[in-house]
Image (cartoon, rainbow, N blue to C red; front, side, top):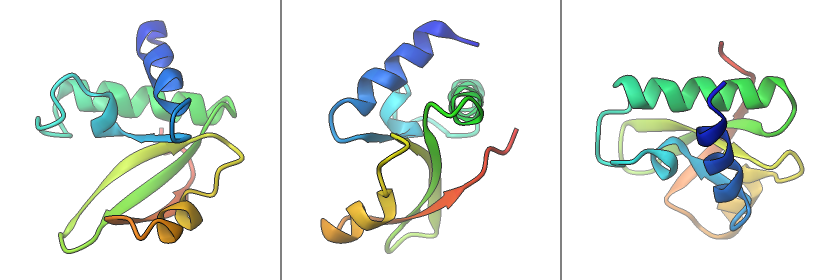
Length: 97
C-alpha cells in the first residue's frame, strides 16, 4: 500500500467523484503500462477490494483506447458520463489483482 498515492487518489475523487489513471500520474502523457502506471493501477485495485472506490473501464470515443478509472462507490460513472456527453463511456469492472 502506498499511502501517499492513496491520499492523492482520494483527494482527486473529492471534485467530480471520479478520476482516471492519467489523472493521478505525475506525467499523464507517459505510457500507462510503465512502472508508475502499474503502481497506480495496483493501488486503485487495492482500494476497490477494500470497498473505498469502484473500478471502471473508460472506453475513449473515437479512439481504440481505454484506461482504468475509479469512482466513489455511490457514483454511477457510466450514467454521469452519458449525461455530460463526455469523451468516453464507462463500464463497471471488478478488481483485477
